Structure formats: C-alpha cells, structure tokens
Length: 207
Image (cartoon, rainbow, N blue to C red; front, side, top):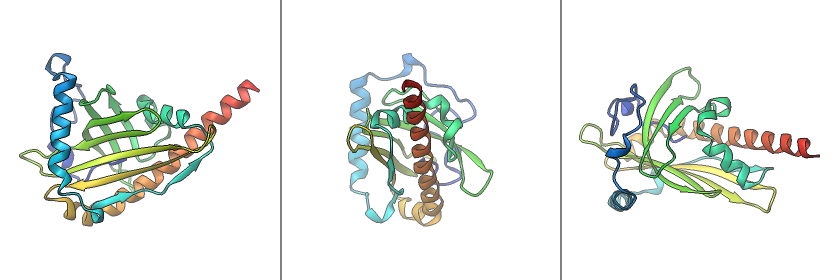
C-alpha cells in the first residue's frame, strides 16, 4: 500500500492523531462540491512537481478472477487484515475527501506504523486512490493509485503505484522507495491470491 513515506509521517497527520482513529464528524465535512474543488486544487498544485524518477510501481499480476471480484477485495476494508500482509488494517468511510486510516507493516520486520491519508478516487472496478497532503509540520506528499484492468469477463490485471510529490519527494524516494516497492509487490500478490480464492470458492459452490 502506499504506506508511509517516512516513519515520522504519521506523527503529523492532517487531522486527528492516529491513535484516535476517529472519523471526521459529518457536520464538519465540506460539501461534495467543496471537496472536489479542494482535491482539484491540491492535485494541480503538485502536478508540476511530479517526476517519473519518484514513482514507485509494483509488479503487475494477472488474476484469474473478474475485475468485480478484485474490486470487492480492495473495497472490503474491514477484512484487510485477513489477507493483506503489507496493509494489515484499514478503516475509512469510503467517501471521497474522507480519511483513510491504515496500519502498514514495513516489509521484513514486525514494525507496524499508522498512516493517515485522504481518499481521492474511487472508480468501481478501475481505480482506488488516496493521497498524503503536506502540512506546516510535515511537507511530505504523495499519491497512491491502485489499478484494476479487465481482461475479458473472467480475468483482470492489478498493479499499484505511489508518486512521491512536493519538496521532499527525492529524499523520500531515495530513503524509502525500496521498501515501499517491496511492500507493493507483496500487496499485488496478496490481492491476486485473495481474489482467486474467493472466485474459485464461489464457482465450486455454484457448480
């Protein structure tokens, strides 16, 4: 998962502290139009800072299951801990502009760190994205995209990327790009295993 760029990242979340794990109150949320305007402004601001050299891309996995099943896996947030060995926990309302609260395990260790991001795209069976936005206390910024590409009715492909942005992008890529890549590759394999297992079980049940 696009987990955290740097270990200190979660200590300066753009909202409630990670330990609180509390969703923003509905009354405090801006309207859908306002959230859209904020997201557009934010992405436009950092487009000029995007560099291919600061992009982490996972392996692409071919999955013997429909895109709809993969999408189900990706959006069944409470069950992430059952299959995702990189992002071992995830909480979100699923609404654009709301927080995504994650627990990310650094590959090769037992260290799990809290990561808070903002949901910015949710296109069924195609794209799921969230991003970290810079704050006065932490200038790190990035966008995580997860792509699902249908390959007929019974197969699809999956891969995920993380574009590091802002003034710290090159430093983050140099210091943390390697383990983020390792985690993303494992996540792709986990998605494949979970989706294929679900699809196979349902086919056996309906046979």
